[in-house]
Amino acid sequence: MVRLAELKDLSRVAEINVYGWRNTYRGIVDDNFLFCELSVEKSIERLKEKLNFETSTSKLYLYEDDKDGIIKGMMRTGMCRDSDKSDSFELMAIYVEKAFEKSGVGSKLITHFEKEAKELGLHELCIWVFQENRIARNFYEHHGFKPDGKTQIQEVLKAPEMRYVKIV
Image (cartoon, rainbow, N blue to C red):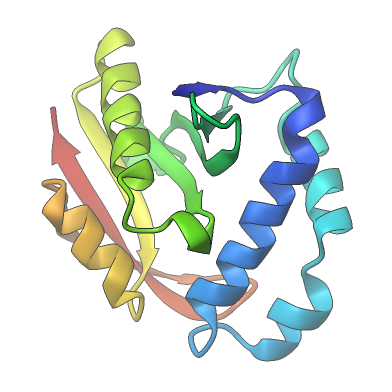
């Protein structure tokens, strides 16, 4: 099931996030960043700052297995941060624990993301993805997202990103 994260979930979310970055972006992002700058502890602190559960404009969701209670994936959603897409809904992050990849967890999170947008009366979705991340690009394309031609260089990591959009 997909549910909102609670404060007690942040260590597991940080684990999925950090190891997701290391497994997914190795070769795209500098190893020094992945293995020296990223840590579960730092990620927990960033999550607490970004997701002040009282005032945050973005939401953090988890995929928790109904059968075994294991949190297998996470995503963060919110209004699109791009000035040209102020009426769009953005998938800001999505990660699935490597052991549970290709089991439908990512698809269930995407379905929930689309449902949330519709409930908010929003019909355009957007996602930024590293240009070199072919696996993620294939996943998004499989779910009906298409590149809209907008690109940017991710500031901190100096890696090119491209924007994908979908109308729901």
